[in-house]
Structures are given as structure tokens and as C-alpha cells.
Image: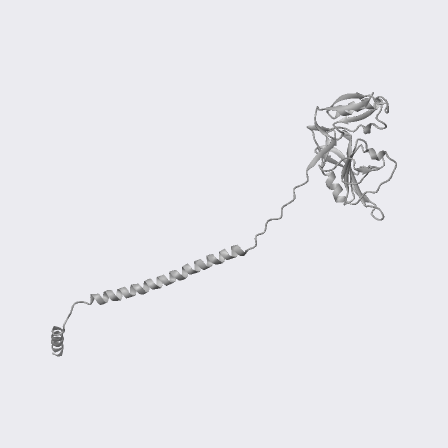
Length: 282
């Protein structure tokens, strides 16, 4: 009974309650406000992100511009070298080294000694400090040379005298080492008033050159290069793979057969088969 009356009351109330059109405009306005709020939020985030990127870029650019720019220290080029030797044995020396810059056989500056004419003078001369030299000879001096070990140079057997130093108290300290190649009749002596290591570095530059040949020394024949000694020089040139051509010059100061000079000079590296001109008195 009570439930029937309650139902009737609700139906009567619904019949007398006015119902208007749906509030579409209000719904659209609310949705627009929500979209504007979302767009504004996204835009703000975007502005912050872009600002961060621009700031980072400016920071990187600033660091790049203010960082010191340093150039690498240039490495000096190695010195130009040239080969000197007898026969197929040669040693590389600085191209700037002159020949026989010595006094009484003692080098006064960096030099290569080949048939040094000053060595025949009976005098003494002090060696300056910091001077390096190489002497080439066709015979080993009996007192100055002693082989300590056997080594191979490009497959050729050689003898090595270990580097030793003398002096250093009242005179200049001089270090000397030597390499001899008896089969090729050549000995190399390196001396230094700098250090023993410099001697070893010099002697490490000895090599065998099979496609070229150095003009041999005629002083290795012994004694004064006169008479039959001049004729004995031809076999040395032949053994080195070089041809000989004699040029005779009248000279009242020297006996016939005296070697007055060779061209190209002793120690010069030439292609195998080249001709060496030997100037003799007579």
C-alpha cells in the first residue's frame, strides 16, 4: 500500500518538473577551457625545452670559442745522409760532413777521414768536445784495432771492436769503436768526444750495397804510391767491380807511376761497372 502511494507521488512530481534543452553550449565551453589549459601547459613545456637547448648550444659555442688552440710541436726532419765506402761496404754519414777537416790527423769538427793528408805530419792536436768522425781505411792498424766479437752485416761476416773511452781528466774524453770487414778489405773507425752511444749509433749505419761500389783507397797498398804500386791499384778497382782508366801527366816532382789522384774521389759510391780515372806521373 505504502509502495503504491510512493510510486504515484514520484510520477506526479516528474510530470510537473520542467525539462529544457540540453546545455550544449556550456559543455562546449568547458571542453574549450580544458583544451586551452592543456595547450598552454604543452606550450610552456616546449618553451622551457627549447630554451634549455639554446642555452646548451650557447654554452658549447662559448666553450669552443674560449678554448685555447695549440699547434702540435713540429718534429724536425732527420738530417740528410750520404754513403761513403770502399767496394760494396759503406757507411751512412750526414751529408753536411766535409772530408778530412782535421789537424795532424785529429778531427777539428764533424768529418769523414779518407786518406787524410794531415795524418802524415809529425805533430799533435787536441780534439774539441762534441766532435764526431768516421775514418775509412783499407788496412787495420796493428795497435789500434782488436776484434772483440764477430757480427753479421747484411749477411756478410764482420768484426766488431767494442767502444771504449779514454781521457777525460786533463784532456778531452774520446770514445772509439770500430768495425772491420776483412773479406771486403775495409775498416770503419768511429770516434766521438760526445758519448760512447754516439759511436755505436754511427757504426750501426754500416751496410752492404751490392748494386754500387765505393772507390777504394790506394793508400792501403802501403808506402808511397809510386812505380809498381800504381799498377797494383787496378786489381783493387777490379775487385770492387770498377773499371780503370789511366791518365798520365808529366811531373818533375814525382817519379813515374806515382798516383797523383783518382776521379771520382776515393770513397765515392758508383754504379757497378763505372770507370775510375787514375792520374799518374809519367
